[in-house]
Image: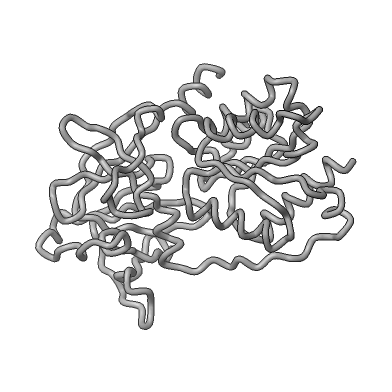
Length: 300
């Protein structure tokens, strides 16, 4: 069981697909529910321009997004209609389809092989790249694509003043490789009146924690709560949690892991790593509830 957990958190399975040309893009296989040939699509009046229609799949109505236009490229060409596929993805308890020109194969790489996107690559929709033979495969940040298509309710309740007083001038650390998810979380914290700092992955977070801990008797004097994504390059949320729990200088910090992937296995791995709680659906109200739990925990 321990070996399986280690493998699952250091290896990355990518589904390779194309958008109008031979260049490959990738998406984390864990977010893929299934792949189907392009079905008949029903147009939805006044819908987002990137939504090409909705498909009926086993009694479920699924919006289908032209992934090419969603990341700022030309629409999927009708000339490739015979090869077009719809990648059915599921995360944050939502299901949607992404229209692509074609799907090729699955490749496995280590998270450490994921490189930052080079300058000039398609903006913030690309979260990283990997080298595959003589090609750079761009990894699409589907959470950011969805954020661009549908607005997220960012409303949040006001915290009890006693809890805010308990937090004082201390910060909550937000760790996420997705700029959109990271900014969403930070914005919710700011709406709650909570100071925060952020990091792009577990490795950067660990270095920041060590830096902030200097000059304090214990880490909770400056950083009582950490909110971290699980799926990240360099060092994922599980490994970050293990590193924190193995260091006596970081004792007492409350760790909330979150993931866009559903499944009991994530909760089991989070608990095994030492996390206090796991959140599998990103909603402002749910995140606020978990933050309140964390504040009550450190105040106890």
